[in-house]
Image (cartoon, rainbow, N blue to C red):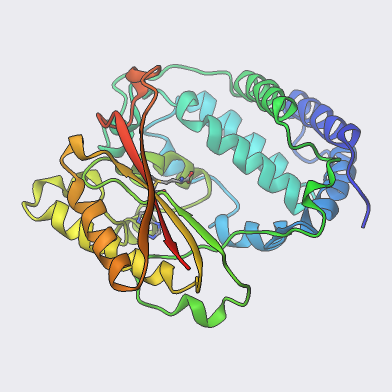
Length: 326
Ligand SMILES: C[S@@+](CC[C@H](N)C(=O)[O-])C[C@H]1O[C@@H](n2cnc3c(N)ncnc32)[C@H](O)[C@@H]1O
């Protein structure tokens, strides 16, 4: 397998910037430079990642087009047109890795490119913008690429580091509220689980990301189906039993997760007890103790409030609990 050097990464990103610049030109002009670099990166990453970019694209992208009808209520007409043309051009690329990269870029920017920038909660609660503001789509993308590359450069784990030799990073999508037997098709030993489960009554995780879902071609109905499986969402807070139901769902999820491990550790991040949700950690702990796990370590931490205007929730502290089975 061809190794991928930092130079290859830099070259790929240079091509990304050129691609963004040129995206205003004909959507039918093929950009071979970016494809060539993306195919190199893809070959490298596909050796390290499971599933492959191609398979990942099949799972994540519902339809290779924006749900323009839904996005019209959120994004200025001209910005939406620019975005639509950009995606059409990106989807002419041969490399699934490059196509995924551009989907990721669109998803990361779509909320700030919309005209509803008050908070994630406004998007989740379907509070549509009263007035539309034109946003120059390619400027958002260019700024984002610079920031993204900046944080990649800052990370300690570099592309040419052999730390990952022989290691495969694997992503599986699973609904933890379901009792389907995931173990039956899981074939590798697991020695640790780190879980960050949803916080009861706190965040509508999926609805707050609906603009991203629209960018991946999802319809309202398709998002609704995903949402119906969501554990502990904010909109459930009006039900008087919502916290107990959430805690019970967490406990059954961790029971399923614990079956992956014979001996090892489970670490869970949950809201701190000051936030009236201790029932979640308590039921999770009871469930784990019943299956032979014991509490090993616990620490509280504060959640940074630097960006309070955009804060997802009023929860300011979390507890990290580690369980052990020997
Ligand atoms: C506190 S967040 C953790 C986010 C995670 N650390 C990440 O970086 O993506 C909880 C996540 O659980 C997901 N979730 C909610 N119900 C679920 C279910 N039934 N099965 C799997 N995940 C679920 C939410 O959509 C949300 O992404």
